[in-house]
Image: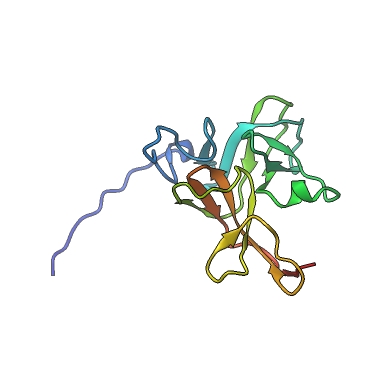
Length: 162
């Protein structure tokens, strides 16, 4: 049996990358933004806030690549990728948001709108950006980050379609 010695080195959290360049010249979250690990080695997104946020407030990823306040009265703001502000962020400024646990998956030309919530489809094994209707069950399992990238979270609870 062969043996090997693995090298270890200390690194700062901001040095840790969850994924590298995917060939497009853009790293991470949405074009121009990045995902890093914070000092607690948690997955975070550094991106521009469309609204002013204080720590603990939640927002969602919009097609423009910014984070906007989430509101339970607007289904369009609770279905996309929801994140939490980790500090005070002025409107139009870059800030850090906590990401849900997930994994970036390259799916070239998937055809979904950036920021869209993706549901388990009524067609076995497929994803859809349309919530299942009556007789189906609703479970968001991924989000479209860009034209060739999905962010798979596995989703949360399940609700009956209406």
